[in-house]
Length: 413
Image 1 (cartoon, rainbow, N blue to C red):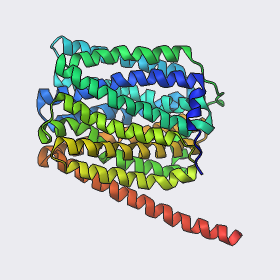
Image 2: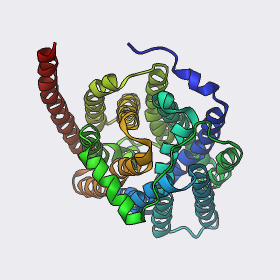
Image 3: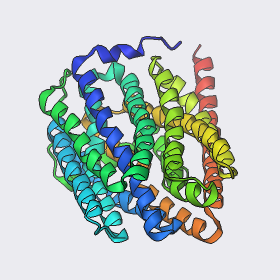
């Protein structure tokens, strides 16, 4: 039975400071994300270009994220994250100066998104593995849920502020404020120390370490199907976020501020779901049962959202999409973190990042083509249907595996 003591993890000072600093930085990140998509649709008017933007942001993960996982297992994770955050500040500042100077071009927006994607290939695996060093393995599920809540509370505040700033003074100031927001997490990382010791990590060469990590994932019968499911959902379901500017502008007739509210609506749902989940200590078996249900909820809500043609119903439906999405993300992340050995943690989380974000490269391009040919709603609806099929297949497989296990247990009794 889940217990209501999950928020106790915030009593750990290092984690609490990291959580707050990260949250401030994420508000800036979401301001930039919202302004970046709006700027590109204003410059080009093309939903395909939005797909290309999403692909540019995720493509570097396909190339570099496994190396990022090796780096996370071989070097000091806190210092690695500190370095990536400094590089992210420079990226945001460059985008701000180009935009404020009136020199911004579509290729520059897309190119700088690729730069940030490369930085994230090293940042994300280290950041996810670093959580265990701050809170310990027993509290990792609650810490993941709280991290997700910070991400999604920022997704409420950032786009709403971003929409107001874009309407008032333009996209460039959103990028500038994002650069400033990185100072919070940089200062925090420079002054905290992890509370939990980490076992010795491998010192094999890069390619050997990557191959070793991939073998571990493939041979792990519990982790492998989760990662395959994540790959499908992240390819054709999660990219709905990149097509919000097209839905807002061409389907719902929204202005810049309303577009910010649409992004915020998904954040409201996600942060609410994450905060509820964070309050409970949920075990591995409960997460396993919850996972296919959360994907089905996400998929059905996304399918209904794709059918919306007016602003306020779409706003409400996006809130429910956010709830389903965060429950799915927390279930997959927690299930993997609870089952992986720490010496493989960075590399396994790099594979998770590859499946969660890297596969979106192909999905963004595919959905971009569908959106350009038949409209954004059809692109989102087709992705939602594929997600439903994947969730059903995962559930059938899980039940098929449970029957022999139950029979074996009965025979033993």
